[in-house]
Amino acid sequence: MQDQPVRPWGLSRMTKPSPVGPPEYTTVEFDAATQLTHFYDAKGEIVDMQRGTVTKSPKNQGNDGTGGPLVSDDSDD
Image 1 (cartoon, rainbow, N blue to C red):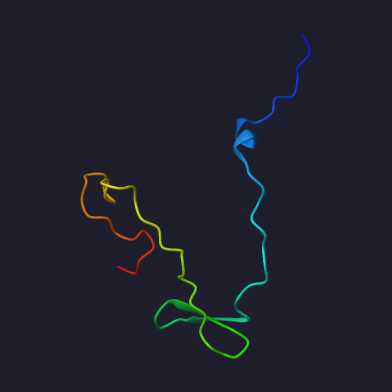
Image 2: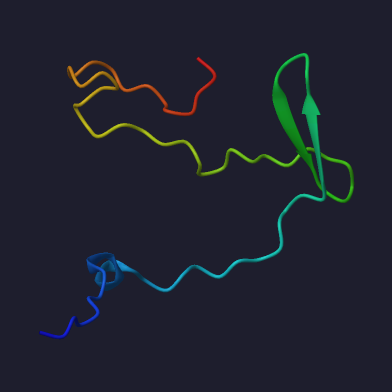
């Protein structure tokens, strides 16, 4: 019996990657006192890197799986 290569199942679920543009920031600085990273554009103004990046746990699940309140997964709380 000859071994045939098997196509990984995940390949059937893949889509084309989204186009990647240039980053919106030009400089990154880490503030050791606050443990925060600040992103700056070419004008030296802070770029809001949180736009559209906050994720929530599934509806009615809660972070602990008990149906408690949803808490932002990447919050500073």
